[in-house]
Length: 174
Image 1: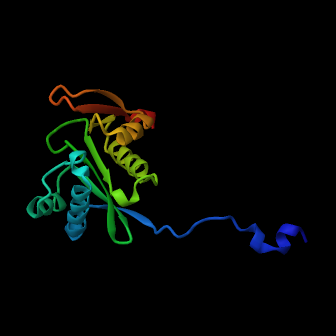
Image 2: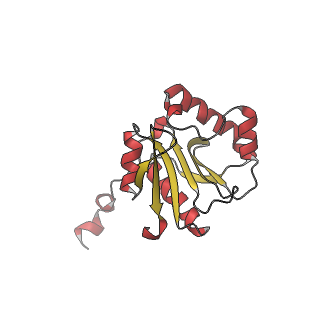
């Protein structure tokens, strides 16, 4: 018997299984409270200046959660808590290139969740026939810009707002 087989404890890989599982779920009415808390937390951390995709009052969130059109909204859930919010919009208005929006809860940033949720949204857009996606980002949001550029986004100035950049990603390069 080999030394490895005789001592199974030494054969174990060192992994940290303390991280709870993650789920990406389509936003639905039962998740309204979690999304409201998510936006409250973003507001309290000051991140609402970087991410304000739609009004966040109770009635507006109720409408978004009940949305039944072509645009899609997703939550990233960890142990029942909303830790990410992502969307692809513009299809309802007839645009061919959807606008992507995404935010990760301040308590879980730096763990690759933004990159993971972006990949999921890119795949959803591609599967729906989009050839590219677009997003807008504040020109001072260095962390987001680094992520987006690393994922292949190409930026130009937003002609309507000086402090924003518009990024495009070709989904054929996935």
